[in-house]
Length: 319
Image (cartoon, rainbow, N blue to C red; front, side, top):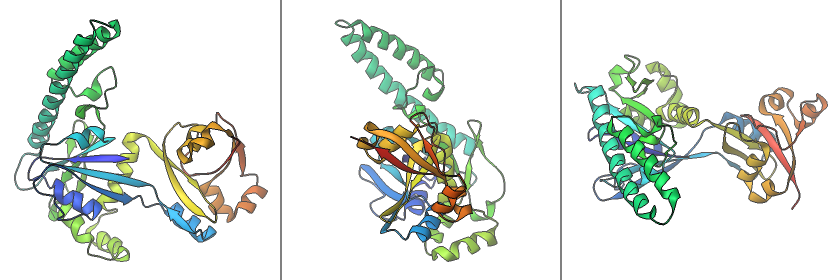
């Protein structure tokens, strides 16, 4: 999963990127391209399975955060979702700040669509399908020109900036944490103090939660971001466990067992026979795989089985 971080100058997007990734003051100012940081997705289920199996290694799911530098928006177009950081301190109007950047994104998308219309019309002289594409793109351009984001268009266009799911982050001062809620585009923003999140990096992991408790905060900005990103993208995690490795795998909700197997390796999807499945909560409650089997909680599932969050799976296949 890749999230692109955006925000107007002074929004605190660089500070938040540093807090989320631990990449601080490493070429974040000036130049072109992007800064990238990869973070592990905390998962207490993996911690428990690691204690149970004592594997050679444990592999968490990861999220890649990209912070564009300058006017280069290539990283944003490649992202699965955007994180829109809004300055909600210092006396500025947060709604205006959010609207101003959204207008920039709309204009960028309109420019991109105009170029695609021109190419489609040229190609339409030799292939009628491009005429249909040009007509669709013209409808899309009109939709955007009326101030509507691409994500509300009747055809999915995720490559456009306004076509991507967006997580709004209200960057507030420490004194404002736990105060007003902020709504942008009808969605409640995550409220964080980017500077405070950076300060947390200086604490040992075991010291962070007591510090947050004193401030009346239930989770870090990173934890909240991970939770929200999984929600808006419709993602879940299934698990594999054994002596060699305990690992979390990320798939979209509704994925069937062969598709999940393909996430591990294409051969597993191609030669899929069935999946051995036990729910994590059932395994934890019984304490061992043998006990789960004895209680009938260990199942054999076929090609139509829809994977659930927390499923522990072993894929049987033949190629």
